[in-house]
Length: 590
Image (cartoon, rainbow, N blue to C red; front, side):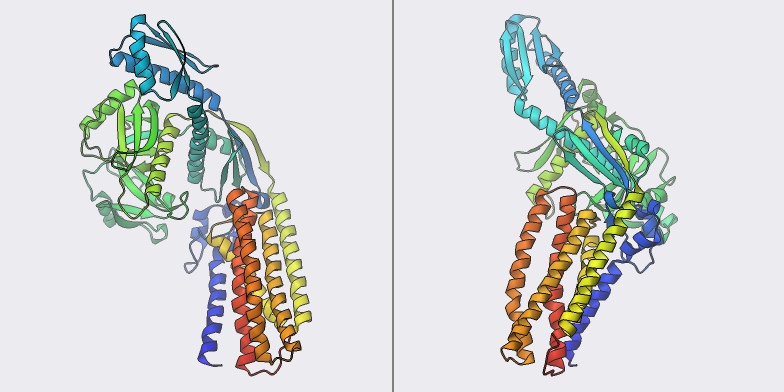
């Protein structure tokens, strides 16, 4: 065998061994850990051997395969709209009185979502009407009679508020569940005002209801920058244990603790902070999957909470005159006074915006901010695009509103999916896949002889590549996913059947063994490529338009098709060509 063949076989062996190595966390979690530990990534990290890949690269089982909790939460957008209209009425009355346009009172009709402004002096209503409609553009005039003006929320704003209320609830729910450590939780919109939640591996519905149903806590807390070396000193005096993976990094000119495991970081920093201070964490978002955190950074903040989200009356993302994304926030009258005092005493310091003990951002206070309105400029440093920065501003606005204006959320449905049913489905699904695979392997070996055995080797590698690909993307395997797995194995076999039939056809025309193999692969290539690409297009359409089980099926299909292209066109050709070209064979066992 010449050096070229060694290189090609070495590549295939390296891919195979690398695939098996990458699947260690998956096999370890499914075989070694019990059901209660399977979804706890911290336990898996502790139990994995040191040479294994990170625990986050593992294949998760869906709710239908391992059991868990299924919940449907209903967002009461009607009550939220009523409360918003009442708050808006108070704001308008305060605004009119502060502007000295006259004295008005505001009354709200909750059922009709109407806001009635009554002027003490009817003669001032013309000026009040003009100013209010120009300033509060989210309301439109319903009627006017003398000194009474009736306003109603704009229909477009109402629809937008309903959508945002559900988005805010989803954001809070996902953040709360992420703190619980549930692997691959599925949180998605259901209809117009409901949220469907799947918690694989969990068995306590009451605990889940308590976790998801409580209101998020939004806080404004001052960052302590008086001792920028506090974490460096903490790290030097009390080195963290190696298994915690806590390191010291430089961020924004300050030494900070960092770890891929939030609980490990907080456990290390516990009771080590200076008196009157707390250590909180901030998620370092994955640039590919925005909902994932690749690491957590530490923040030292004051233990005192001078302002909470209860004082916040609104938050919206917009674009400044400098074409930079920003978030505009406003407070109620009491909150405005507290915010003005806080910013006056904290010019030059950073204020952490904290949701459920997680620092979302920590903007710098440049000046005293009065009037109950503030602006958080996002800036556009770095290589990220304008759309990414604007998306971050919109997310921050949702975070702020999620803490300030949470729509009431009630449990519409909650049920526990039996783990025994999941075990039965796993056994039946796995048995079906193994029986089908065994029958195909036997058929290929008998019908195509040595070429069939080569196709069988590629088929087994194809299956491993599918599992490794799903583990890399942290996908969740469900029953539809198993169906997609079996389907892609069938497509991979079909490609090898097509190649072998082409080789037989070339041999029947009197071609030599070498020419038959080369032309068989060359002529089958575009047929296989075209079939795979068209199916890939269908898979991507299913992935981007489907939800839940449909996306699981599409993910498995896409990964399987890419693996099939590699094994059928590259792997089998290298092995077959070696046996024919490398050994100067005069015939092909096909």
